[in-house]
Length: 345
Image (cartoon, rainbow, N blue to C red; front, side):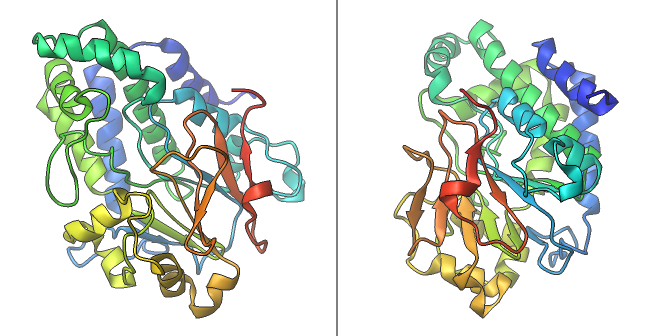
């Protein structure tokens, strides 16, 4: 494929270095402008005049939808999604053999990522522990931490480049890891798992990039949408903790309860019936007979896990590069419609 954007995003991956201060600031600032502009045809404004936290595509022409689970610094995963040639019948028949990226260029597909760009998890456990030793000795930008941030920030650049290139077709929802300042409040919580990842990233960003880059990246995180609705599915980062109303979802950023309830829900931590209620609220009372709710957040041991009478489908597996393909007019089947974007991983 000969395309300047294709070459640009692959060059980001192949460079294997930290983005420069100016490069990261420029792409984050541009992304902030794109997110701030919004599009009221699918993003109703919140009470504060900013684009709301709900993406509602139910009244727009339906397109094939690719849902991408938690990415966690896996640049190669997102590139493989863009390079993926879906099976016959997913895209319009005139686009047979086209990749997801080629379909994006033609306005023939949408992508929704469920969030969590930073923090490589289990695959980088030993690296995090090495970086933690540096951190406890006052070294915030040592070799293991730089390697971690090369992956994470390159992925962030790629996500932002896609958002700027395809503002109406490429969407990235806020996950619980979209908290680069490691703050407590507004539905966000400091993050630590194998080490003290949230604080370590914050200290690295301040040391290497300064508060200006930190501020603009944090601003982008703060205006990310939290939930997306389509005729056949609803998507958020985590299982909805309770049955939020449409108004609450549009104005989610003004309620810590809603933000936390869409990004931090523990397995078995949601009210039974919350998924059916939100599907009905966003898609109509009869939609629970054909629509599903897709999310990631907590890893699943296989291809997917079902809860809430099978309406909630969780499909984040850190060992796999799976996506969910939601076809217009077809009921989603997790057995056939969740699939890897590469043959082996």
